[in-house]
Image 1 (cartoon, rainbow, N blue to C red):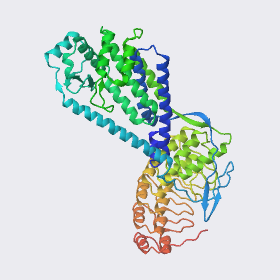
Image 2: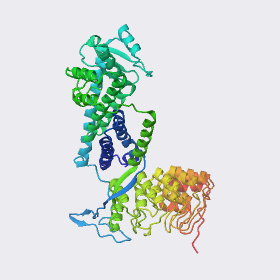
Image 3: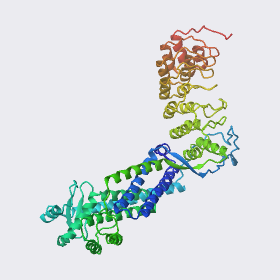
Image 4: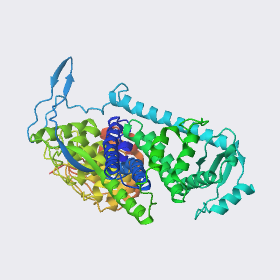
Length: 600
């Protein structure tokens, strides 16, 4: 599942559903690994445990971007399902699609089947809508919390310039190497310090903090500045964003809780490393936790004494056996590299079924899905191991059908899996719905991006199976000037002549494609080149009644009396078709009405 899949099939609700499933199992692996590391490393410092959870959160945030942006690597883990042919309704009765032999598909109906409509009542649709609604509501909840702390900060008083607090900061050197300016405020309704913000962080102290003992004031400042130095408010926002994206996953909520707890314990360790007595500090936290904090869980501010965390924190503070070392830059850099590598590998992994011994059913599923335009089912068949070069007489190959549907990403996937860009389907040319080569299929439908991709991956611009036109002829006949110009630039022969089709200029003139006629002439097309049974450009334009093209051809040097066996000349063709205006033009240009020839 990549970004282009979603863009190329925006109405296919199966694809967002499969993306959610992919993120669920990949996110589960990440979180379970974080749980395992924390369980196995109980003697790790709080800083390292916090880093483990933050890296897990960062991995969750990177997974959607990398999963959509990188190509998939299939991992086959499950047995493939044998797909049965779908039922087709014909008339008043119902009959099943005939069995498919190894070299031919026989459908109950030869009519093209439109892509399946998006059904608003399908389970996948409802699941995707439920996921989106949950994410939006949770985003609003967190946004309201952020607005509340901003408003609360605006209502607080500035105290960092007061001599008492300035001297306290300077005397104990708690700012260390921190270069970001810190605002220190106070609020009457607070009973415990809080901090928030990244580039311009804020510490809000209770108004009664001025009466605290100096060692407790110092502990509070060290604790909150440690949060700022460690960028804990940013990591808290990351964990909340992960909850918005993965709100359906219970382990994500546990991860957010552990991020908060381990960040508090890391800052507690910082306080204790400054020499404060553990019992005194634990008593201060216990006293502060007994009061009421004037905001709820949704507010993104880091409180020093949350009731939900106080038990584990006091236990850790009073435990003399716990290691309280800070994290080194080397360990942080190494952890980041390992995380990026693991997340990238996990993002490109995609679980697919193991191919079934009944491979014919996979090819059948693939071709029928492509014929319907069902991208999701076609992708499943490809990933399950369907032969991408299977050719079904009269119905095309997977690459031909994908090109005919204009599905750029499926074309790319098929070629990446080994599909032959020059494969010629072996069925008859007459009575077909789909051309016999992928390039012709894309040129016939006007999919310029598919044409460019096929040529870039080795498709021959001049390939013309026996009985078929070249891609340039097909594009000229259908009126796709951009494709014709591209094919010419890639070396397509503008004067290639084939019995049964003529030349690109003959086909453009026959169909009245004035812009293609101009393009082909500019690119060197021979205006007098005729093909027995297919006429020449002037004859075809005169027979079709295209006066403007007739005048263009004559102005470009077309022989007004040129004769082609089986089609006579332009004057005869115009007269037989009843185009008197063109007869008049031809006579004015010197056509000889007495010129009569018979085939020998």
